[in-house]
Every structure is written in C-alpha cells, then in structure tokens.
Image (cartoon, rainbow, N blue to C red; front, side):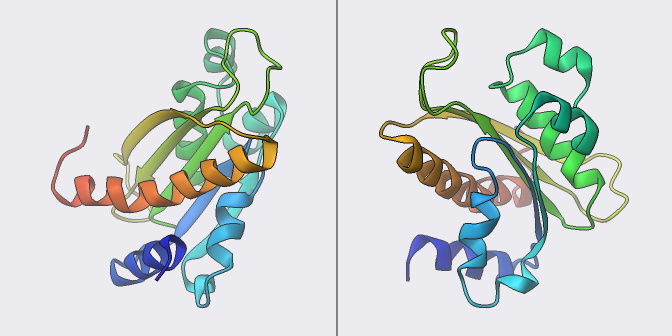
Length: 168
C-alpha cells in the first residue's frame, strides 16, 4: 500500500472529508487524493487561489494578514485553511502556500507553508488549527509534488494529535 492509499484509508476509517485551499500546489493536493479509488467520498472541493486577491476574495484572507506577512507564511496558510473550512461541510481543511524558485529574495526556494484545520461539525465555532513550514529541493514539479504529499500525510499526523486532545 502506498502513501496515498494509506492516507485515503485513514480518512475513510475516521470519516474525514477534505476541502483544500491551495496556492503553490495549484490543486495537486486534491488531485493526488483523487487518484485513489473511492476518493469521491473523501473530497468535498478544492480552492486554487494563486494570487493575493484570490486568497482574499475566495477564502477571506485578510488584507491585514497579507500586509503583515509574506504570502509564503504560516499566518496566510492558517487563514486560507480557515476560509476553506468555513465554506465547506468537510471536517478537515488543508492549505498550502509557498515558493518553488528564487522569485522572492526573502524566502528560500522550496519553502512551503501549511495549515490543517479539524472541525467537529459544520458549525464548529472553534476549529483546531495546526501549521507547519517545510523546505523541499528539486525542480518546480518535484517541489510541488513533495509539497502535496506532505500536506496529505499531515492529515494523518495532525488528526492523531487532534484525537488525543493535543491542540498544539
């Protein structure tokens, strides 16, 4: 069983459905999960929000957060995931934002920021959020693929913490 199949089985066994808010991965997180048979029961929807304006318009990332933080930041990833969670009945939201090359002198190439939101129900007013930053090497496609896989593996890792009551 490969990593994607293990994540899908875990999600099925724990009644998890996912929504994503993706920037750098541009839909690859949801697309990778969709490659697994039966993924239709695990996916609600995916938001691909590449521009700062799309992050504001589609996921409600605040202008203040965008002004105070780089687009590649855990603060932005957090608001992306919370925004996706608000717009979906899914009980887990995953977000990613990052850079794959040297387009930003302040952020090393391959830097990727994530957030995972777990909620107990549709109207959960206090969802639990976990954030992480990782750095991958390689070309553009390799970084995006590694980033999407890391995001999916994070569902299992952080859901285990969530179930144990470790809210980070």
